[in-house]
Image (cartoon, rainbow, N blue to C red):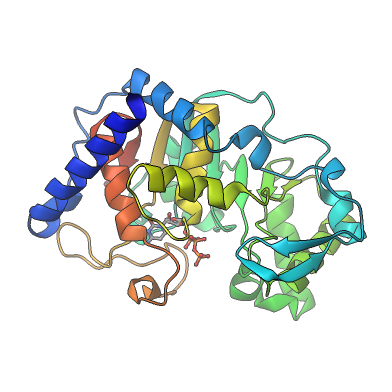
Length: 319
Ligand code: CTP
């Protein structure tokens, strides 16, 4: 059975990976990489048993009415009221309905992108997914500018836009969103309590400025379903990172998935320092046990999938 063989192979390969010493565990063949279309189809089919990205990518208007109370996905004791603004921004139908692409880029935020000169290649894909409103203009040569789908954790408001304390922070945010035109802006608003004020402010700014961006708010079951899929394949991830979530969703829409900016390690293969994010000074806090993510394990898994032709991982220069 396909699922079993994929999981066996993932486990065998990670055993092998762990047995090997030093940096060689992260090496992958770029020159001879070839897509394995039957494996791509098999993975899509297996993931569909857990979630349907077309549906789970966003709740829709008819799922709620204003005033409804929901429980946070990862904090069931706490609740959120569906406000009028939030309700008015829920899509009528899934923004990914019937959308299919030959090649897609999923762009992570690692500093490994700096000096990669991958901008042109990234922009040449039919559909480009980015994470956490990462800036592009100043880094265009390395990361490109095309963004068809971009995620935004509520914490981004605090981290990158000063918590909207000043008018200039709000202007910067509105400017960033206006550059997206009618791309999908994906806001995980129902995960944990804490960001609800930020989400409300974001919603209010979108409405007030009549921004064209197409808002999406992941379904209440998405994260559990994604975790279930990876667990079944012997990859025990407590909280999938945004990048892994995006790869998992993209398997539904994309025949060929190319990953860039995935490198959750402080050094490259030559021992040179790599920034955690290509655009800010956030540090590698993710290696502490307090961290919800297991990016190194995720990376090893993606590397195995690269070596089997299920996806293409680029961690070097694009030439
Ligand atoms: N990523 C990576 N290596 C890094 C930084 C990021 O592989 N050094 C990938 C991860 O898959 C991550 C994605 O790029 O999910 C986007 O980066 P970031 O915005 O930092 O991700 P989040 O998972 O959303 O992090 P957080 O929960 O802290 O917001």
